[in-house]
Length: 288
Image (cartoon, rainbow, N blue to C red; front, side, top):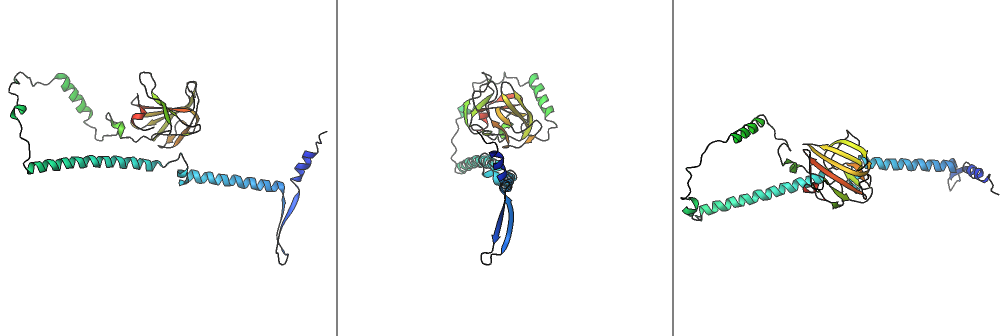
């Protein structure tokens, strides 16, 4: 038969007192004496381990040590690298224009200009007398409307004119393989990026969380509102780290890749980018 008294006896052994004595080896004088038990030792070791773990978490969260952890790259260094690349490209274009200008000046000084053919410049057979140089009413209305809109526009903000979205530096939200690309005709308004499970998803730009909820078809979804009417959407997440109203920085972790929602076929991120209410291809502005 099972002896039910064994367990209480074993538990009582944890409370047995022991004495830890430190003696002088030469004089056998007692220096330190501690009364200990197995239970006290276990409690002290457990609390020490928890404090050590908490200290490591605080060091990683509030010090630059987190930049050495994979997935927490320094966003400022990446942004500075992209800006330096754009500056070097602009310098290269300006240098080519200056070289062309110097060559043209050299040709003028050395009298090396090619002689122009008069017949190619003036077409005597063309009749320009029938052309009427009168203003068109629609053109005048359009010019008046544009001049009125720009009359008090003292500052030209990024995105206030078409095409200025290219001036933004978009960060890659997730490293992975694109399995399904943007297709407006098939109403697939984003791209599907496959990545390992529990991979961190980061914000592509600075912005504010406007939606962070569960949906039946796309699982956990988070949407960010950025400057100049840019909206980024992240679907099929397993966990959301932000809530509606939170302000996030570019490169900050906002969710974990997952397989949530009825439309998901495996762990991946469905990423969409919208500009002025129109879906655009994310691969036109960042590399995956």
